[in-house]
Image (cartoon, rainbow, N blue to C red; front, side, top):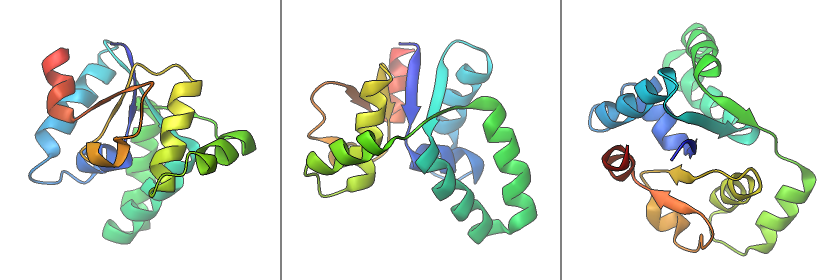
Length: 137
């Protein structure tokens, strides 16, 4: 498994060093930094990530942390067609439907998330928790 889309929660676990989840997120990021895995986020996730970083720790922290994240992660474009098709998926969580559609369009090997239940309807892409992904590395 080489190309993964990291869900917003996993990126924030790493960036904010969330106590219960940081270690797993860090292990994945280390693999990305080493080049063993290609890590991706979507352009729409970038705004959410920056917002949460700024809201929790202020603009300076958000700006510096976001710069570091952009070195680590590739950013996938989100197009009108992605938004339309994700909406047509009919999921309760539109954000997760959009991430799934963009991941599938870009041929990601998996989506790594702590909220696998939100991706239960994803039939054509592997959905893994951080622990599951680490076990497969």
